Image (cartoon, rainbow, N blue to C red):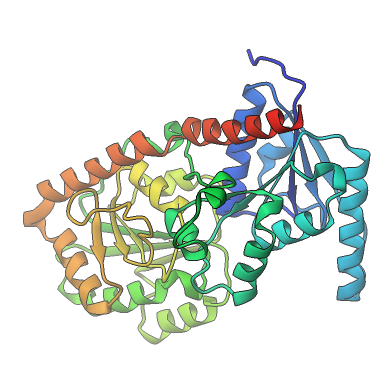
Length: 374
């Protein structure tokens, strides 16, 4: 039974779609409820909530059900006013938001009474983001406690942080419900099952994996089945065209984002994360906790989470090295060593990326804000 507290935490988002950031916020909210915090979620742009469990939790939902204006500018103004009015009426101890535009709007337009009560989670790398992302995050840095989900992201904006910067800029890694992803592996010795999970976008670089596997497929000892799971973005057309041009339909299963993604991890022999850049990628740790052998690009491995041939395989981003790593992983003579590497990955994720650790770190941040307000 949770210990009741009078402290109120309000999470703020434009909307709440399927996504890694939203999954992390959902897990954080669940953990805070268990600790007795009173939770509100404001979606100031729409009433879209992907995760059904959010609506089943004991929290207050404030959703913008208004019909959007056809004018982008007027719509933006109305959304900001909706948020300000909701915050004026409410009385919250902490406002917690995430992603750049939410962080920008909240820090610019939150009522003055929340001056020292904003937590802003930076979820992505600045590496390929527009330059104004970093400009405004630095300009508004002292208006919030800023949480980065990788050391890489923090170093990108503050390569040599001063003690004053370190006071309100912290790194908190993502956390995962280990019980969900530690199901027994489903072994199928007749085929090789390879998985990729993440939105079908150029950043994720799925087409590189398909390109390399298309080259390798005729030389594999066992039949190959490739799962590509994620919502369609700017790369879907290229992926579809590549599959058709190379007659890969029988090898590939294309699926939208799945609520029961843990069931798919349980059948993957190999998980590949080929992204050009990442922060603290949810899918990597979900795969590690599912005891998948993980093959990752340097770009995906921002904080050296994976040590090559220790708890996974790392390639330099090139087709040539990816092919070498996949051949290494698929060679029957390496089965015992690959099994050990996959198990090392599981132990590493289990030890370092628990949901409870993430929640504890955020609670410590909130408590610092509570003390400042008292």
